[in-house]
Amino acid sequence: MRNICMTVSYDGTAYNGFQVQPGLNTIQGHLEHSIKLLTGEDLKITASGRTDAGVHARYQVFNFITQSQIPLKNWCLAVNTRLPDDIRVWSAMEVPLEFHSRRSAKRKTYRYTIRHGRYPNLFLRHLEYHHYAPLDVEAMREGLQHLVGEHDFTSYCSPLTAPEKSRIRTIYEARIECEPVDPAWNSYAMHIYLTGNGFLYNMVRIIVGTLLQVGQGKRSSEEMRTILEGKSRKLAGPTAVAHGLMLWEVFYDEQANSP
Image 1: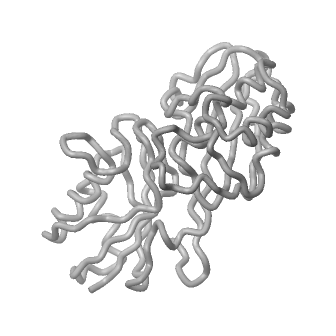
Image 2 (image 1 turned 120 degrees about the vertical axis):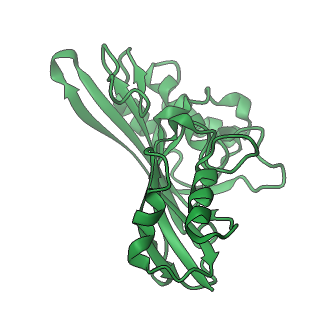
Image 3 (image 1 turned 30 degrees about the vertical axis):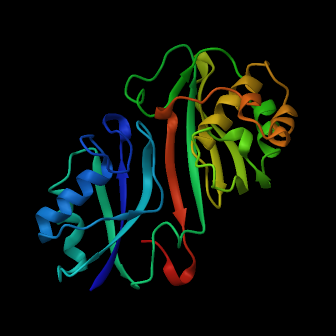
């Protein structure tokens, strides 16, 4: 038996999320089908996390147990020839049998992209949220810092989160980077990065939706903290649209390092 760990990138636009669902078009479904075509095995893959419908991944990690003796150097090319063009695996390694892509992960980074400017980018419209009106970026940066540390994120997660699941999470780093696009129109791409030990259902998108209200002047930066302390989803802003969100990176320790 071998435990194969792979990394995959995907454009989530056409998919009903990562997790396999009967009758629906999912990333996991395509990955498992492509591996079955290759090895003949009916197996289940384990991913570092589940992304929702329309959410993308630059660096998703998954693993599976197989009896196949296909050389590691051949896995990516063989799997990719059986995948749609918007899903690509790009590394493979053999890991200890006890390695588990989700439980072994130490931290994850998500990136949410907002394009500010007169017009959306035609070619990136599925990968970023377009916001026409000006935003107070410094106020958003200040507000974001109130979320760093270990907190109860009840206010920033969906009510559909499993009731038995702890809402305690740790945000290690939160930052905003702005990339100029067209100075003539004061256009820029804003990237919001959140790195934590785990994220609740819709947590990043609700944080971004609330931050946008701070940027619009509808809330103060300090309200990000008071919302957090209130422990009620009703206090936070709307859930930002899915297509601006990307799973950016997953981190493991030295003994179970990802490819």
